[in-house]
Figure 1 (cartoon, protein in one colour):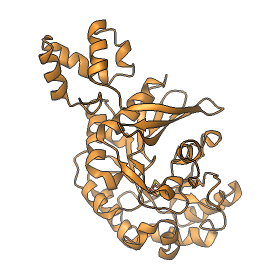
Figure 2 (cartoon, helix red, strand yellow; figure 1 turned 90 degrees about the vertical axis):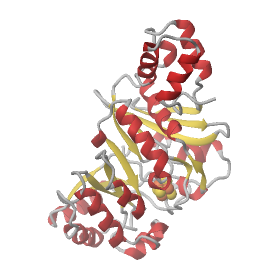
Figure 3 (cartoon, helix red, strand yellow; figure 1 turned 180 degrees about the vertical axis):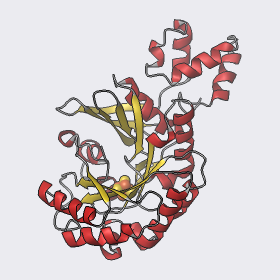
Figure 4 (cartoon, protein in one colour; figure 1 turned 60 degrees about the vertical axis):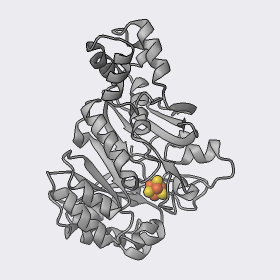
Length: 353
Ligand code: SF4
């Protein structure tokens, strides 16, 4: 049996043909699956057919925890995914007229970034494309606003699960109707995956998590830097930026006293001024999400302003991102660490609201 979002269009056509349904039904059903209302409420389809479909094409994500922040705008789910109930998280971030969804691409993560709850737990398994797509559709069903952006910044390193991630991107673009530029894939610098991304036809946005301007510090925060140092990551990022006008942003989790000094901003500015990527570099500064398991703290507002000003003085644009959903542990891996796996260390991550 295939799942509701693991099923291809051909799978749905074959199923309906087997049931003796008229040919036009397949198109109707396919469209209903990708609309912002659950299949059970898709009244364009006969009730008996909806019930039969719901049974034949089950959902794969079982809600374990659902939490909404005090502002009512950020909702986070911890799901049990698939037959092994692998624990993954999804965050819905709403504004007045649109919504963004932050999806996980793996259950756990092998990258072991020192400040990240997910990384500290290790990799459980890759998610399938259907499990990734379902996160977006389920969040869209819960959102009064249209989902206009999807960011692959939840649990896992998307480029370490390239095939499933790319298949989900194609489906979110082709079937759910998202603009490719409004799909952002985040990486801590998996250089071969970045180079592969540069060859794809869909111009998705790439977010490169840098977090430091020198290799020693970056390796201590992001161990993958040992294999793919900053110079290689920036080269690959330039290749992506040069291909079909893709947008590339640099993410920088600001940790008080670790990577947030003005001298470090100046070093980052020097690096990025020399970066040959089309359109110049843009940096998102993200105060580290507070968590119990990592000793670091978020940089305060004044220091963030000084950091951004030091970048601006070198001609590098920076945006200070708000952290959202702190009261519901909205950074990746936090809910899973806190609620479902007793004794697991907690940390924080790079999710950008
Ligand atoms: S920050 Fe991202 S890449 Fe690093 S361990 Fe966490 S989930 Fe993995």
